[in-house]
View: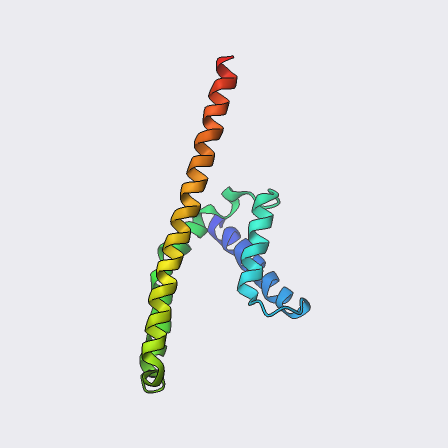
Length: 127
């Protein structure tokens, strides 16, 4: 029953994101609204992490399976993709490297910030 409740919470937030897409006139997918809504709800502790943690971890574990239909769709439309395959590959490879670079920089920043905070807390405790 715990898993059904957690999945229901995630599904409810996802549905709310889809509804937001129709009421907010911006070209943003409903899934993004849902992610932002879940982030805000977790940040404000309206939803506690423990209330969605187990199902969230399960969904992350099975995420590679979610790419199978997209891959099959690409294979099915191979004839249409051949005309612009080189630009598509260049864009895919370059954006992948950009994402890796930005993710690394953000991770470095967050780790440095955490280290400075922990040093500051240690100094306060020592005094």
